[in-house]
Structures are given as structure tokens and as C-alpha cells.
Length: 353
Image 1 (spheres, rainbow, N blue to C red):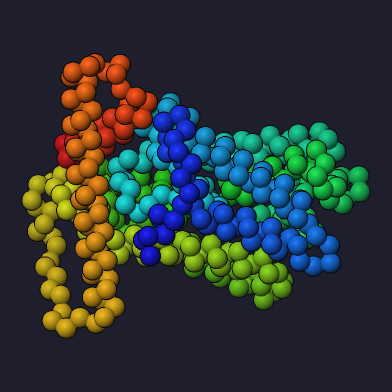
Image 2: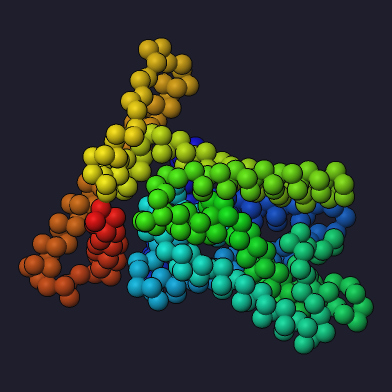
């Protein structure tokens, strides 16, 4: 299951940041285009138009994170675009999460949504507020004079859809559940030293479980009481949140968080961190499923170790190049690599201090 984080299309490096598109985003757009051709009238062109706007909104969301990262003078994280923003692997270190950087995307989407709403009001229309959209044209603005949605593919229609998509992405990322922005902000906050909570505290996972349960309940009520099929969107979002939390929990049990310490242990408090953990004895007879999962876990550990070893060798090569030819001889890619690895080493030293 954790391999789903590698299902992506690499778009290369943009301004030193690696950008990839997750297959979930591709599937989301393709299914939307396919469903738009069904029914009595085709809505292929409007669907294609708002899909392009949606990708633009996602890019602006990540631009907000990047600007906040530059302002905080931290290394921008790699971008893996999916329908809810940037999909962060559970392997990511919690100490690398800066709440202000995480809030950058939210601030961009919220600001653009409010500005669009004001602009539409000046043009005699109102932006769609419901995150489920309208009955006929989800994100189309409503004309105040007639009470009807604006005509598709007009300038007002594009403007309204742009604001509504920003509004929806803002609302979704306000949910305090991983892998959404507010969930990462919550986790980064409770992981701060001095709060008496370990980085593997249960507050973050339990918050995600609660959000998933509330979304399922709201979806069922909306489906049964109002007969709206868009309620399935809430259920699908709950499944994504629950699945992400379960994957992260299993990877923590497997000891896959190498960045937190040596082989998954956090030695920031000395060897006493091992005293609270009890030895886990594997049953003598393993089922086929457990044996398969154990082998997968061992393979993940090996891949992570190989990745870290390769990065250390690359770092040595770059440092040797600087020693011989000076820093000006480095390429943009080598400079970006040096910044990322140096930032990770500094964070690791700071966590152990």
C-alpha cells in the first residue's frame, strides 16, 4: 500500500523543486471528462475548462507554500500534486514541518476565494458558497438579476469557477487530519519540544480517525435525508484520510521512520527512549499475510538505507568538487541537492540537541 506514494509522473525540477503529478490527479481528471460525455447533453468542454482551472488552483496552493518557505528561509519541499494539494509521504520527518509554511497554501486559497467573491459581487453575481456546488453547474456563479447560473465558458463563468475551486480546496485543507494541511499543522504543533508529547503521539491519528468518522456520518445523512449522490464525496474523502493514517501507523510499527533516529529510534533523549518500549516477539508460526507484510517491511528498510547511503556518497562527491574547483563549479541541481541534504542534517542535529 505504501507504494501508492510512488505512483506519479515526474515533471522534473522547477526552480530547484522536484515536481511530480500523482496518478490520483490524472485519474480524477480523466474520470471527470468521461462522465461529462454521458447523459443527454455533453459537458466535455466545460469540464475540460474547470479541470484546467483546478490544476491552476493546485499550483497556486503549492506556490503559497513555496513563498512561505522562502520567507522562513527553509528548503521548499518536493511537490507531489494530487486532487487535494501536495501528497506528503508518511516517511516525511515531522520536524521539517513549519506551521507557517504549511499555512501558506491555505492563505493563498482563502485570499483568492475572498477576492473572487468580492469581484463577482461588483459584477452583479455571487460566488457559489456550498462546497458541493450547484445542482446544474457546480462552481458557476449565480447571477443576482435572474438567480440562474452564468453561461458556461464566459469570462464570468471562469472567474466564478476559479473562486469556488479555491474555496473548496481551502475548506478541505482546514480539516485537522493527515495528509491535509491543517492535519500537518496539528502534528507539527504537538511535535514541538517541551510540550511533553512524543512525535508519535496519538493526538494526530485520533484527530484523523474522528474527522473520517464525522465525514462518513455526514455523507450518510446527506445521502439518506436529501438523496444527494455528492455525499459519496465525503465518504471517499474519509476513506483517503483513514487509509493514510493506517499506512503511517503500520510504517511506524515497521520502524520505517529512519529520519527520526537510527533505525527508527529517537535517541534525542539518550538511550532511555528504549526503556519504555517492550520487546515484541514474533509468533513462531506466521500466516502467509504476515510473512508477506514482514518481507515488504524489510524491503522498505533496505530501500531507505540504500537511499541514505547513495545520498551520503553524492554529498561526499559534491564536497570534494567544491574543495577542488570551488562552489561556483556546481550545477543548479547539485546546489539544490546540497541545500536539501544540509537542511536535513541541521534538523537532525537540532532535534538531538
